[in-house]
Amino acid sequence: MSKNFTGAPRAARRAAAVLVALLLAPLAPAHAAVRDSALPPPPPALAALIHSGTVKLLSRFATDLPGLTGYVVRFRGSTQVVYGSHGYLFSGELISPQSVDLNGVYRQRYAPVDDAAAIRRLEQSGHLISEGPANAPLLYAIIDPNCSFCYRFYHMAEPLIAAGRLQVRWVLVGFLERTSQARAAAILSAANPAHALRLDEDRFDVAHEHGGIAPARHIGPHILAALKRHLDAMSDVGGNGTPTLLYRTRKGTWSAQVGLPPEHWLLQYARPAARR
Image (cartoon, rainbow, N blue to C red; front, side, top):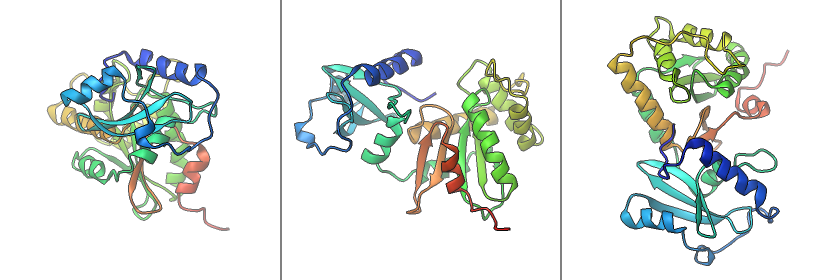
């Protein structure tokens, strides 16, 4: 779970953000240029955290919703996007009428950073599960064994991996459900982690959103340390849920995609299919 300075329950944060998207006025013209000095000051709750040094304000911007201001902040090493309106502070997912995760859009637009540092930390964990040829386009997929969207992404990616069109390094985290950490540990501590991950996804209980592998009864300190490193890296790149994908842009830098991507996005990222 991503670190969040508001302390509100996750469901409440999500509901608040979605209500903002639904109840505020119709969308304004996108990408309207507004001077930073013309934007309202941060809400009192956020201003207090900035003043105390708990949170660092990186930038602020006008969103596509009239009256809603966005703020890119840094909290405990994690870059997050939060929102303010009429003195209220909102933290959570902001979904457009077209079902676009605006948090990710705004983060990339107003906090353009190279996530290569997170890649380096992940590679040091020693517990990534690699699949696909080394010369295929590479992405890192941060997944929870009890995540139904991760289950869908796994089965979206596997045919491309099998065809030699994609290379994936699966990064296990465990925070969604009570059994998530133990299931992730069972996968990482297996003699063949890739096979254990396949069992978890092939036997996934979609109705109850539970992975198909039995949770580990004991989690060793090295596995716990790896899971923490993975979760910290997800938070560092702004991931507030799974799957969080790290992919290489056309400019050669690393960037994050939070949530299940459209299938056409993955097909375009993968190596083109061989002509027959």
